[in-house]
Image (tube, rainbow, N blue to C red; front, side, top):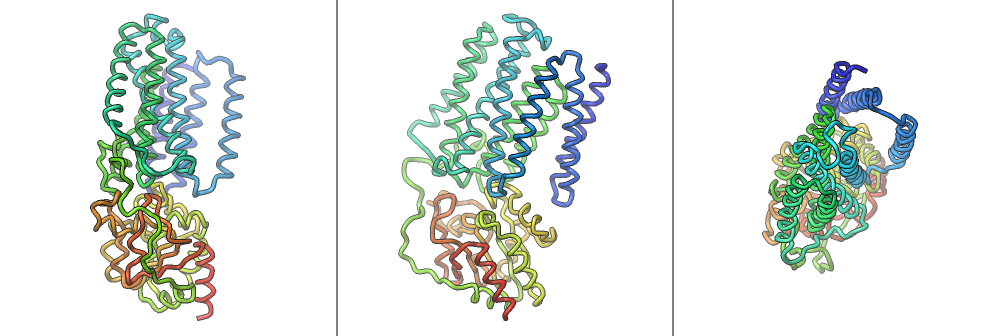
Length: 467
């Protein structure tokens, strides 16, 4: 394949990836975006395989078959509740791939036209070193994020004295190692760089609490893109540069939007310094609480919502775990048939990942125009008769507005406490993912509906049918 045709096909693939991002920005065009992404990837892989320097087609085909089979099995078996940790795991593989490609390039530079062993072009060496560092940080950071989301590691922040100074020292050491590598081109400095950045990835993510994991996943997504982009410069592969830049910039933009939604510092996110500070536990952390709460049944909830003029549904991770979206939709249809105005309110980080709740509601064929973002719905809670919170916790906690000592203080929330009545579906009184007790449970206008989210919705549906 000629270089001109290859460049043209790579350009076409890049355009497809851009169109994929554009399509995925809205639920109504997301399927079209996925199609563009698939077409772009097929073009990219096919063009790469047709390059004159490509050898060992049998090995490449075997890799495609193994990787494709694993991906297919995961896609068929994965539950929506596990999607955030799956994304984190995929990010780790991108970071690891960047490190492996960098090592291959360093030990076989002739194959990539960047010089020979011991005499690699300085510009390529800098790109290689930066790509290696970012890739290694992405790998171990994503592994920690996966472990926290999967429950293999506690979601509580792991903090210790002098941690920021240690991270700063390791960051300075990374710069020194890159300089030494470029000056001497000794392999030992590359290996030390990999070890140091692998450690740095662990230390950046371990101090971050569970409530901030959605931002971490988004930021690691950005890191993986920049790692791929850096290696793209080393390999002089325009498609890898463009694709990496797209992933890196889109992940950074999403992280910035989420930081605003959670009242976090964007710079602190990048540096991994936005977990809990100090050695004390979070104020208002979950545990035994002897305060009295008002509890009710499915019959009570059905009566209140049937006689309401307006109802707002607030879905959260509990709904995802129970797979209650379809039963919830059935409940809402019954309410709408009785003339109740029903809408859905989505917090930007509901479900531990942006868009998680939107996908679940779309799965249940909930109309897109009934699903409103936080900024669109918050002003309406004061005039809402009933809010039905199903498995959402931290994103409805009034402590974010009232308790300066709370680890979630300053995070914008869905202000459901302003509604006339709040029905809160939850299995028990345990704290949310941030480890903070929800003050909403103890408000006079809150009625707790204890039990599995799906089973509770089924009880409400039966009661509505009988009323």
